[in-house]
Amino acid sequence: MTLLLLAIAPAMVIIIYIYFKDKFEKEPKMFLFKNFLLGATASIAITYLIGGFAMYFLPISDTKSVFQMFIKAFFAVALVEEFSKYIIVKQYAQKNDHFNEPFDGIVYSVMVSMGFATLENILYTFRYGVSTGIIRAFTAVPAHATFAILMGYFIGKAKFSKNKFKLNIMGLLLATLFHGAYDFFLFIKFIPGISVGAFLSLFVGFYISKKAMKSHQNNSNFKV
Image (tube, rainbow, N blue to C red; front, side):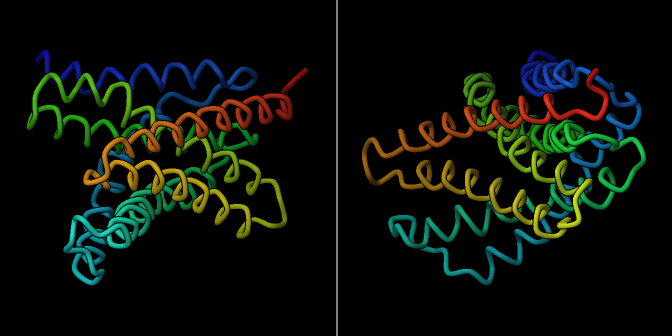
């Protein structure tokens, strides 16, 4: 029970934080929960399906090759995982009538991402123990939320724009860029100290995410 609580607590804190950041028109709790469940089920399934093909076809065998770790980080992991979340938000949440202001792109992207991150965190925590759960609570789970906010910012803009395709893809690519950078620096374990780059990229992501949320709050359709 302790491991389970440790695994799900970080995502729950982030969900509550984002819920209250949606200041002017709250989303229906049941619809939020459905997006969370899709993140924990459909998104995970898509990741395993596409990720399996990616790992089979991409040249990733030398863990001491910077190029191969780049391919793994940005394409086999980041693009696959972010696409699996993106497709749920775009095809399910964005098309729903509840998605009625730009900030909703952030809300639903985070819900899907936290569903994904929660199941992933449960698997890692139960396999590797308490220390892993604690570390991931301050790294991997907030990272997933950051990537989701960056993606959701553009998905929110796309909903109310004529350039839907361009803005949606921009969201996917930006999330992939930051996710890939974060993983890339962590994968290169054979260069001492380079892992600092992962946390620097995450810090930049945090900063941009904060600005993105503020922008959509200021431009809310429901702001009086």
